[in-house]
Image (cartoon, rainbow, N blue to C red; front, top):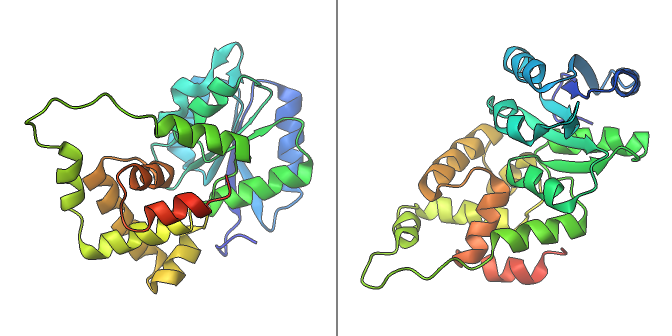
Length: 238
């Protein structure tokens, strides 16, 4: 079930009319949990409708009439309440990984079972990731590749960022690292705070560390050995 009393508002973006119709019928049949609020068949239409409709989840095909949808991902995510789930026939792993780097919360193929599509929409709406183990492993490995060594005698800018965190924010990072795939609701319950308060803390943390989402925060915590990160790296089943 959705964590909201209202159905999940879904927008579908695909350049195949048959696929659009089929997905709309599938989602509409589960109207107690989710509903289709709009459809689009190209990038410009998708951006315009996403800004106007502010859907909870955008179900996005990566190939829109021969054009890559990767370029429009940031604009689809302009509204902070919107998540993107990739549903595509694309098989190139580099392209799929790029979608996750640009903010997509999940990736699945068009050959996925109908029940899996519905479940993925619900999980992504809850703030969870919908990625298979191999994709998660590749994305994390790519983000954690060592950077070029810094010039000596210069202050480490990352150390300055970390120093700006409050003790409370460090505690939140530790909980997030230990429960990487957990929803905001579950994390808030562990912290004994509301989801609204958690989102405010996350916004502050993202700003201080210059990261864009929880996946980037997780990787940052591992790379810079923030509280609990080493333990989580050993335990996360990737």
